[in-house]
Length: 160
Image 1 (cartoon, helix red, strand yellow):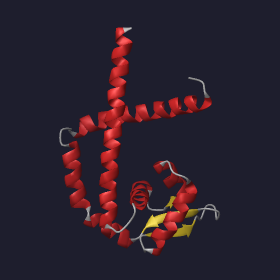
Image 2 (image 1 turned 45 degrees about the vertical axis):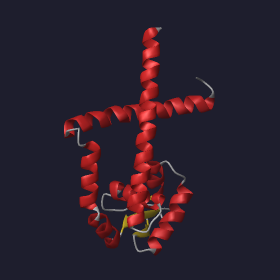
Image 3 (image 1 turned 180 degrees about the vertical axis):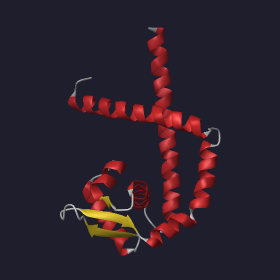
């Protein structure tokens, strides 16, 4: 029983660390957004598109899935970002029901303008880790994220 108590205590500590990290990352994203005159969700949408786009644009549903938000919210916000000349939205050549979203040169320039500050910030956050350690941590966190989605599904279905 002592081993289970130890594991529960370690799990709670881990969860509180994640809550703290999430809070700090929200503040950081808000700061980046403010530098561009955007809301935090708009900044995250730009970052998701930048991460996901492989040169052909990104479907809105992929952005919504990456950010764990409703697709209708992505549609609403990408229209606003398009009006600011930060995104282009074109009809998908594979399926006319969907749009492919891409960053404009203006958006890429703004992101590039912030890159040295972002690199410095990452060095502060991850300064105690080398690339191999960070890769290992990411692998473990990916596993925990997958397990937490399963646990959330079980809880919502009442099968825990």
